[in-house]
Image (cartoon, rainbow, N blue to C red):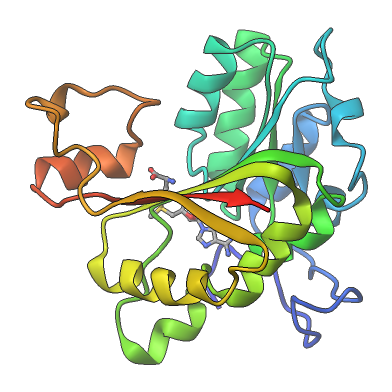
Amino acid sequence: MPAHDSTQSRVPLSDPTYRYGKARNPYSAKLAEFPQIAFSDHGTEEFAGHWRNKFETARPHGELHVEIGCNTGHVTRAWAENNPEKLYIGIDWKFKIIYRGAEKVAAKGLKNLLFFRANVERLKFMFGPGEIDVLHLYFPDPWPKKAQWKNRFLKESTLRDAAVVVKSGGLFHIKTDHAGYYSWMQEEIAKTGDVWTVEKETLDLHAGNPEPLKLEIPAVTLFEKLFIKDGIPIKAVWLRRK
Ligand SMILES: C[S@@+](CC[C@H](N)C(=O)[O-])C[C@H]1O[C@@H](n2cnc3c(N)ncnc32)[C@H](O)[C@@H]1O
């Protein structure tokens, strides 16, 4: 169990009765400094279906974007600044980076961005049916060894969970650097043709760009910048909810 995860319960994460354990991370208590911005553990499930009401923006009915594994929130923050009419939620399970992200959102006075400190395997409990317009998953941990594949986030069950919380006609955008994980994703996606349509996909997202190193956040993520520097082609797929 990773140190930054507070999960200690024996009940599986996929079970509605699962409870997060008491977090020992010092940033867990500090998150309470930002009650309007940062939600943690079961707090991320309390307003499922009603998150738009929790934004302090004057326009709480905008398109809702959710980024899974947002890390420092660098991409969601840039989106929120550039698109004040849209709403954003960044999810990551690391306490400290969510705390730092919330500090920056508070300092900038952004009203259209919330952070969730939670295990994203609980996605289906965090949102109501069709609540999300666009879901983003950028560079999920690839878990390269065969014995680790069971830890991969993108699989048939999570694609089906995502299909519940993304509205009909909504989008799920995924990027990875890892060829093995991408092949795995393609197989898992193929099992969910009843709920998702592959609208577009590419094995080299930046192929047509002569200077991909000059791309800036949020067009690229922090991890993506490193992969581009190493000359690794970025695999990407856009799924449309049926
Ligand atoms: C490889 S990083 C990618 C970060 C960012 N999307 C980027 O492209 O720069 C993966 C991120 O997912 C987060 N993460 C991994 N497993 C998670 C889980 N089960 N629940 C929530 N966040 C998770 C990690 O903490 C990390 O920030």
